[in-house]
Image (cartoon, rainbow, N blue to C red; front, side, top):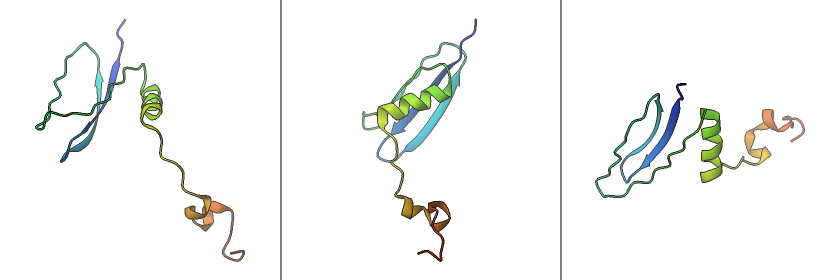
Length: 83
């Protein structure tokens, strides 16, 4: 049985900010290096990408929603006549 291994790696350095999604179908090795010697990486091994996004959000937190009034009149339920 062939299992798919999905790795979502976020590399953060002073200059580079790239999101890399790499889907692997076999065992591989990865070398992650930075010029200043410091790399922040999350390696999440999951069965599918939906589970990976969920676990990444659990790890790093999610973006809070803005207040309802900040979404604009068409999204708040108010109209221009009631404001």
